[in-house]
Image (tube, rainbow, N blue to C red; front, side, top):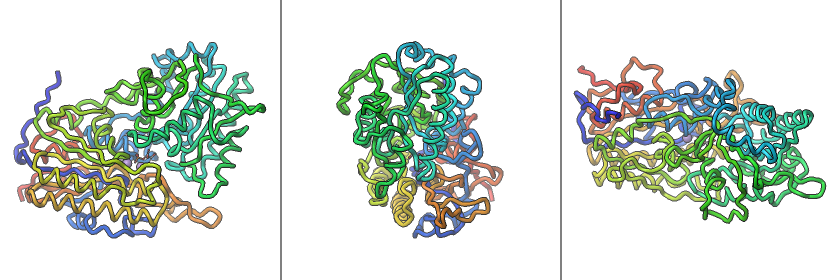
Length: 554
Ligand SMILES: O=C(O)[C@@H](CO)OP(=O)(O)O
Ligand SMILES: [Mn+2]
Ligand SMILES: [Mn+2]
């Protein structure tokens, strides 16, 4: 049995009201016209910086600091919130899949052996995000899986691609499709009947999250399973090129398409007896499709046909729901998260965001586990997001509503921890609309102000940080940091970044002698949990990454 009892902190008192604010996609970067946080009016976040180094500092939020394979891997919400909530660094999906592919273990484990019998007479379908972004999936992993599966008996393979443009540059979809087409042609040369069967842009087809808009998943289902879509092409390269010619076309939002043969028949609907693998390792944007593929009882949309298939996820996406029940690689075992410790010690928590980030401060925070640890001590509030829009048209999103709910929770004095995610800088940053992103950053800053004002009123403490960079750099740069021009134009960066993120602490409840330690220069997101556990008046579990704060006696 785990010992859940936390030791009382020798100097810090219990029962403080602590606001934990995560600005999504808010990194630190030099002043620059493509740094939307710098351009925006952000007096609250700026004021924190003045209290450096004692109460403001930077944290690492990418690469090994969050369990990613290399230092070239940008941070993302899943690994960022996992680290923030769990207080330790776990080798993450991207890395675990790399290892399983390199050792060949992926082909020996339960998941692959479960789908394999279908190779005899059925088709192997691979559904996922086609890019080398490394946030949800990776092209090289797909290439290895294609090769490995065909060498192990898959004779007919159909690929259902989702174009990216969010973790990689817009327009890069064409190159990725060309690359994978070469691999498929090689397989055909070896007698494997392999081709792309359907596709669509990730934000419009399949990869919705937290049940914001089931139509997104339905559009994918119709193309992937039923073989039906408004656009039909004979090749995927042609599909992506043609669809990108439409006004305002964007890789993230390409409409669904199916590939048809010379008779106009879809080349790869999913039918009884087939095997299906969703090859994204990241959970949030695959859970909805996993439910549609796995659940007998399902009422989110009319599936028309529910084929009897053998389905495996690249990973198991939800540890609480055990979904999907079959998977190729075991997910990181993110156990004993801060939330679980807090409920065992009677600390009451309120968590809130709007739909598009709701699972970040609940599901990811709790180690990819849905639901409460203890519903008597926790309350999670989801503010419905707008759906069917790109957030540059609504850059303020629900920041004000989130802040007002947090304020109410703080002023009620019913909770010790009030935790929110403010999505603006990330969600609008991903649209690549620089002007709108400036508005978004200002809105997030105003929300922070509302929350710290409430903390001021109740004599509480705040901890404000971020999960990774995004809005602080909106342009692709060369090695010397200058914008990298293409045909004389800048290339807008829609993705996250490798930049560090700020963390600030303060509030009337924070004793004057509490400061950031100076001996953790490489501190990262995983050091945050021990820090707020201290602010709640407890010592962190001994295997957590060390707390960032110390109580000085000068
Ligand atoms: O939108 C998403 O899925 C990712 C980018 O791919 O962003 P975040 O990690 O911030 O959720
Ligand atoms: Mn994020
Ligand atoms: Mn993001």
